[in-house]
Length: 313
Image (cartoon, rainbow, N blue to C red):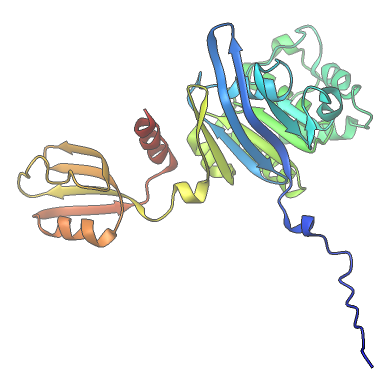
């Protein structure tokens, strides 16, 4: 007699093994008349990650963010947050977003606490306790008037305002300008604590050390176009080395003009360069000259970034 055996797999879903994108930007383009804003910008931000968005001032970071938030409308392309079109479902998705713009403007005569209560009134959540908790972390005086605050304290107000409703997505545009180093550290700790709760963060900055410190992945933008989307760890992978050499005798000018060498600087008897390739090949080259001293280091993110930027140019 033939037997039929049924195997119950259960409620396993293939979707559980897939990364969920909180932000999806596809070929996003914005022109101001004939002037360039951004062109064909595409990247995704996965749920629960801290994603860096870096580039020099004027590269298109703020335009991308404002278009993503439908504060300005794109010329073409699309953007989704939580799987929903940012224009069609803008008011709905914004309820779960905390946004800190690069420049902050408030009603000067209002007290900080009154401004934050007014902001909290737009969300159907009890936020007073949260406001006081955040203000204590950021050392913010809630009873001062806005026009009595320094630039740094106004930025603190923006941070509290952006986080008071416990958003699922935090979007930060140059968030640390005006903050002293101690407040920056408290702010970073606060972001990491939110991220541990599952909050997704888009962190836009031109300060590479901040991005290197916080982010899992990064998108590099230049002149309105994305030139690279990469893991921070990959940008600093071990096959990229920084060499600094002190030599005992003058060296032929083009001695280190070989494959894999970049950013070569020769000054008197000091030579420095970045090297990417077979480490044995460059060590053999170095061993054939008279050395006084030799340093081999991992390059920092800024050196890698600037090298990549120049290469793209």
